[in-house]
Length: 89
Image (cartoon, rainbow, N blue to C red; front, top):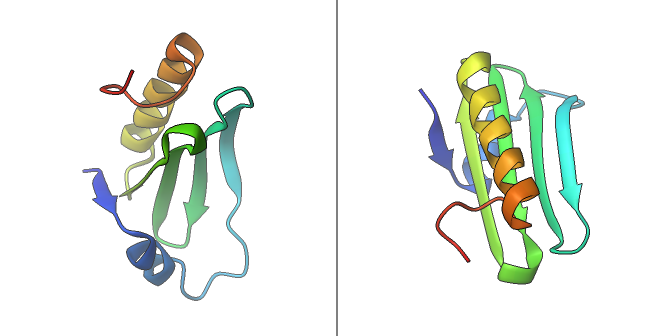
């Protein structure tokens, strides 16, 4: 299961960890967008952002395959559209 979470929830999930290894990170400088997948103590955190459109979403899952598929989906969107959000022009 993948859950959309808040920054506060992400902070709570990160308690007790000194570092959060980046698994995957892609950026688009033109649209100031990024997709970043990190390892947390008990699961995985996916950040999807686009500064030029003022959009930022966080997702959490304990299932690596599920969250990696979602990460790959947003990276593909960013490569095709210039930003990683499906329902935004």
